[in-house]
Length: 190
Image (tube, rainbow, N blue to C red; front, top):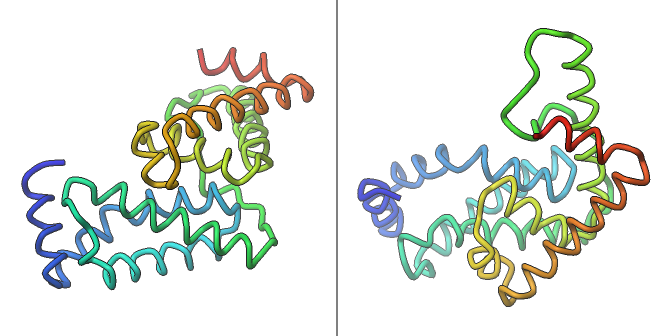
């Protein structure tokens, strides 16, 4: 985080709407992707992001340190997403939100179709994880938070985060092995 962003966060804490708008535009897509990966529902994810940013603005005085803004924002988002999931147990499939990994196969339509299928299979397995395991996977792999940052976001010990990551990886591996996808996915990501 550079000095300019810290100044913008300070301005937002003072209630300057332009600074808040800048932060909203910077973090909106990342927040939406995390919300969607947690809930699996596009409409709920949009609501969660709006509610998260509203809470962020309304509770801006609670932010203790400007450098911790992103972790604080994702703490609000994660808890908001969990609350929505308890209220709404419905899921809506959507294939337009996630591209796992930035590397895609170029050229051969068959390879592109196979890679898309593998991404969809992996996403389906991630979405079937327990909500707390899914959340640590989303925060760690898709949003690149450290285990220490995730522990603050989720309000638990860092060891708990590491344990959930381990268990989630193990569960994903077992599920992919059962479906015959594990070796195919590893070949593609290497």
